[in-house]
Amino acid sequence: QSALTQPASVSGSPGQSITISCTGTSSDVGGYNYVSWYQQHPGKVPKLMISDVSKRPSGVSNRFSGSKSGNTASLTISGLQADDEADYYCASYTSSSTVVFGGGTRLTVL
Amino acid sequence: EVQLVESGGGLVQPGGSLRLSCAASGFTFSSSGMSWVRQAPGKGLEWVSSIRGSGGSTYYADSVKGRFTISRDDSKNTLYLQMSSLRAEDTAAYYCAKVVGGIDPFDYWGQGTLVTVSS
Image 1: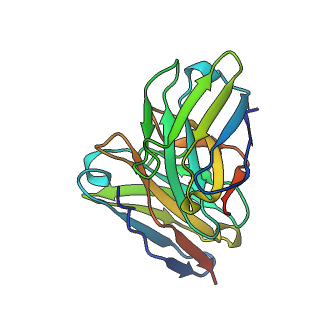
Image 2 (image 1 turned 90 degrees about the vertical axis):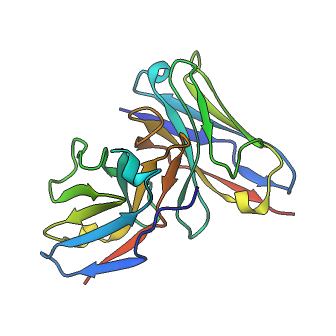
């Protein structure tokens, strides 16, 4: 159950778009359309932002979008806002009937 | 309103045991899958265990398999995590989370309960 690979940090200016990648294997990300993304502000509880690769739960801004190509999933945030500054985690269902998270990405809004 | 309230965390010695509880309300608990996710201080999220709704199957991370047991009491709308043979690396905030689908993703999270394993 190796963790999914995410960049440690990304940054962008207000109004810009950024993309966070999440790389796994054919046994997790590449094998299922069960990739989810979570946002966690410092000291706060994680919040589900994207499920099933690209589905946005009710109440999540349409500035957040998800996609997948092969063994890599991506979270794109458009029109960056100061409140988007947070840690982002991807997660995937696996062929072992387990769930694996990525190591997390710290987004800094410059 | 969905509410998940964890309890049972605390300081325990290596090799010791602890039982966490998660009281749920605001949704049909018996038919919902539930999970435990932990986060070591300053570290990332780690999935620990899931249990399907209606007394269904259980699933564990390799790091806790054989030491932790997830269970539920649908009559009390409560989720449990029995932890034994605790190690220093089990030190973390443990979150209870409601599952949207089978065993993930997690659409509602509790505030977490801190478990510290230390002598």
